Length: 166
Image 1: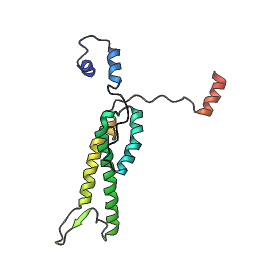
Image 2: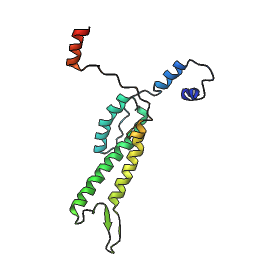
Image 3: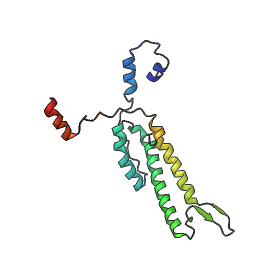
Image 4: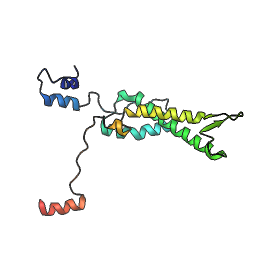
């Protein structure tokens, strides 16, 4: 039975609660950089290379997360690409909506395919990113190691304090 479930059910086996909490706090999968898929675009690779060190420092990425992380990075890169194309088409159109609204010869209008693709990429990025705490709501559910406490005094003030209080 998973340790978290044992705790939720009231520790019926009367195991040491501190040991159980330690097991919950330690990641069951070793933290590390997942392998980089060879199908990512250049912009997605840049996103991956920037993101992995931060995720490792938080202790929330492992080699098992390659697909989810690649999905996020590619979706974020796609969203940026579509947004650039939309911005360019908007600037070139008379009504500044050429990338958002597609107008047919009949006068009928619909959402431009670039806007649809950008919206889809945004949904994919949000869904995959939520697994890594990329939004405030998903971040509050992550179990990460607490950040180390900083110095009480910055360098100059600490040195002055050491002179008088050590």
